[in-house]
Amino acid sequence: EGVGYGSEHLEDLTERAYAQKRLIDNAPCPVSRDQMKDLFESSLSYW
Image 1 (tube, helix red, strand yellow):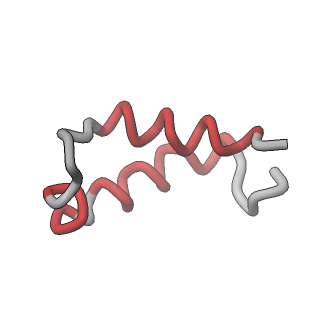
Image 2 (tube, rainbow, N blue to C red):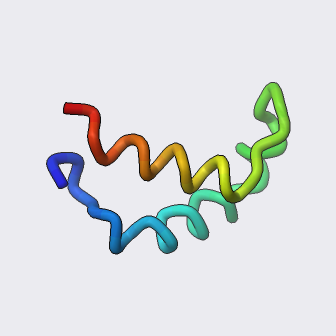
C-alpha cells in the first residue's frame, strides 16, 4: 500500500477513472473497465 491505496480501493478507483470519458475517448486504443482495474491492481506492487 505504498502508493496510497490498497486493493479495497480498486472498485472506486476504477469507477471514478472510467467516468472520465473525455480522457478515455482520447486514448490511442480502446480501454475497457477491466483493463483499467488491472492497471490499478498492477500498480499496487511496483516495489
